[in-house]
Amino acid sequence: MTTREALHEIVDLLPDAKAELAHTWLMDLCDAEDEDGPPLDAAALASLDRGLADLAAGRVKPLAEYERERGL
Image 1 (cartoon, rainbow, N blue to C red):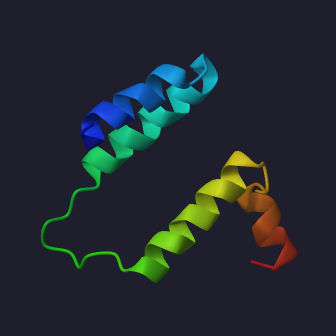
Image 2 (cartoon, rainbow, N blue to C red):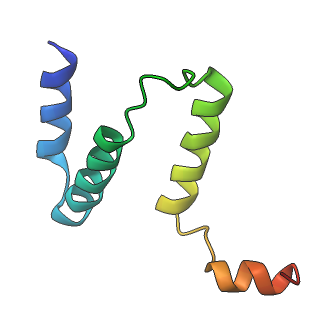
């Protein structure tokens, strides 16, 4: 099975609410292609994965609250 085929299978398993989120992420990924930029190393990718997991689990706060807590 190719990577594209595996992605199609995963997308087919997603409930509608998560499919919309996956669509947004994939469109962002397509738009983010930067051939002139440096490749992301394993540490950067792991950091992104942790951030996405925090978002998925609701471990986020509004920017205004963050700024208020830090006196910004």
